[in-house]
Image 1 (cartoon, one colour):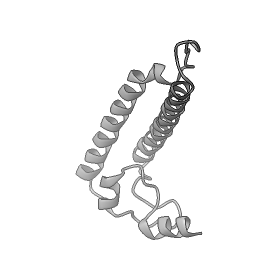
Image 2 (cartoon, helix red, strand yellow):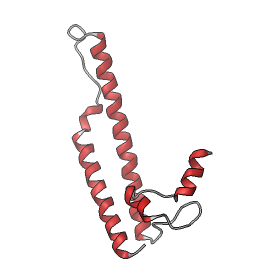
Image 3 (cartoon, helix red, strand yellow):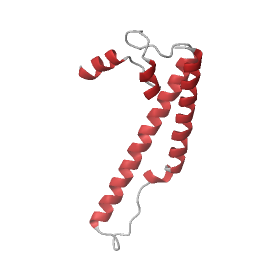
Image 4 (spheres, helix red, strand yellow):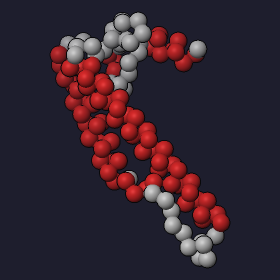
Length: 116
């Protein structure tokens, strides 16, 4: 992988991080407990509100996990470990990294991991 490709991926990661942080900030209150007036809201509305709250919490958890992956990937770029499979140490195809720059395994190892 050449320097231009690494720079492109670094910028992609930084953009992803900014987008996720903005989404997290916008959705900050979505996971808070829902206060419903029992006398005015029916049982289904309460269930819908609780389901929406749980979905918001899960979305936030996934954003946080992706932010961690992005930070780890940026560190791997800085230490020149980026682009190599954590399992077999072979170079990961650039096309795979452009789809998801946080990939840590080549396609063969990823398939092996998911089938076992």
